[in-house]
Image (cartoon, rainbow, N blue to C red; front, side):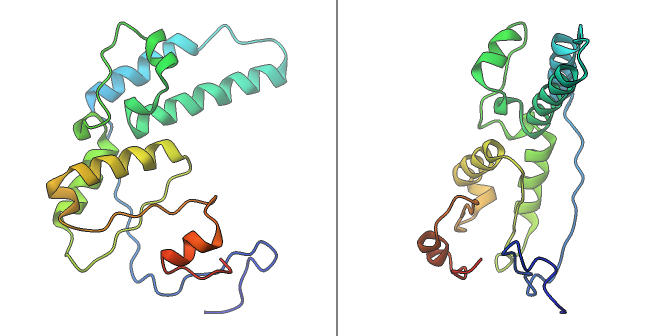
Length: 165
């Protein structure tokens, strides 16, 4: 497999992942409405100072990413500021194209296959775990595990992951 390109970072390459497949999803109509409302609510006026403007733009992008993951990923204060909209519950798989696509994949995957889902933030991972654990079709008796960066070596070992990762 070659030399580890991350020797100083402590990352190791995983060689036994046999398949990678991207599954694009489309936002639901409801997600589009919330996305547009968040954008309209936060889009201006922009501060004159470049640093403050950059911070505000990044903040809005963060909110829009949360909506794309699932509208319920927006915190309660943000949802309250958009009170004209009815936000779906965390259990509503169909409220997010990403959640619906994942559940579709889970329904069609062989029982012996393992699925690994990556996400930059924890809120969507927690939400997905809740949905999968509650779904009879999605979990089908599978063990659902969550691996996050803050896990200590002992917890990683419990997952069967090497100590030095």
